[in-house]
Image (cartoon, rainbow, N blue to C red; front, side):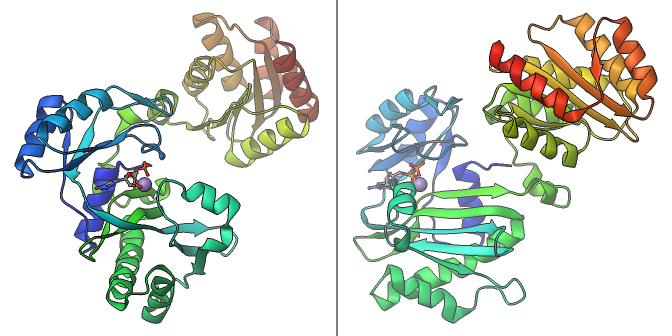
Length: 379
Ligand code: GDP
Ligand code: MN
């Protein structure tokens, strides 16, 4: 689950990280009022969307006074950044930036640990730094038994700042960022830029936190921060239907029971030269309605050229899936070809139901994937 910058800032602030104040506006008048409340001086107006690179997209603008802030808010509200519509702006006092660094923590699968990454080359070009001059990024895998040790934090902070007071401040921020990262169940927490200002202070001017969805159940206060209006509509619909769904960029819509089989299916789609349009696990339950919801979500995606059902029935029953497919396609006719592979529990009954309704069902997974890829390509 993605948080907005203002939500991430609140979390960091609560953990004692220096973050400038700021308030969120949904209208131009509110944005102006906030700028006035902040003293009427220079402010920064920032699009709140679940996307990075807002600065480059024109979603972060400095204003000298409240009037300018209102003018920027008028431009930014309603603007589209990476296909997301901006509905909120954060208005915060503008910092007088002297330098921009990067500090971030991610869960790293390779080391199976949280990895702290810092770079003195922070700011809006950090992706380019990572791609072209990775040696400018210092990494440290944190042992979760001990956390970030003070000398480790200070060691990294000294790669950012020569000034010892600034290095100590940065080390303290890293420690607090790690604590916050753990406390909220994050898979990523980053500050970019971690800025020094002309008066020598160190502060977090941007914050990004991604929460591991599996941590939400035991953190209702974090789960309550979800902004569904900012998520892809297909993912919201899937969540509401109890499906595990992740939208991808390909053309083969996949409807599978079980996460492992869904992963294997996506691998096989790629193996045969196709690209999956989504990850979708209808789960282990026997419920035709889930299949209906799944088909509705997949067919709503205009880039889907063919749909592949891959069902290996255990608890999921073949006849339920077949009924779901028949039910769904009688409700809204499919515009794309459907390839079905159905084996396992109640396979015969399932195939019979499908055949009667004019569908054919395969039992071989390779064959089904090959056909789906071919038909997506032909479409
Ligand atoms: P992002 O592009 O989505 O990462 O948005 P950021 O919040 O990081 O803003 C992008 C860039 O805008 C930063 O790297 C800064 O260079 C600049 N910026 C953001 N806030 C301020 C500010 O308060 N003062 C100044 N001078 N520049 C800022
Ligand atoms: Mn940033």
